[in-house]
Amino acid sequence: MDERNNDFDFDFMPIGQAIKKAREARGMTREQLARIIGYAPRHIQSIENEGQHPSIELFIQLITHRNYCFYMKKTVMILSSLPPAERSL
Image (cartoon, rainbow, N blue to C red):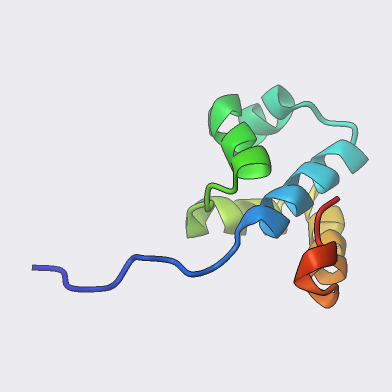
């Protein structure tokens, strides 16, 4: 039996906001990004707007995709340097 604790005490909203900001900076719709990375647009929306945590596979795809990663990395760095109260975009 798997006894790992999967109860996250982490706010994933800044990551979702960084994904959205990076996507918008590239001029991409959710549908376009979904086709590129192979996920449903609704799944991307729930990560961007509802704080759903992305799988590690999806997160790696986003930060390594050649047309997307620069904006994602830059946005995550900016958000992570802000105090929690100022991280909303």
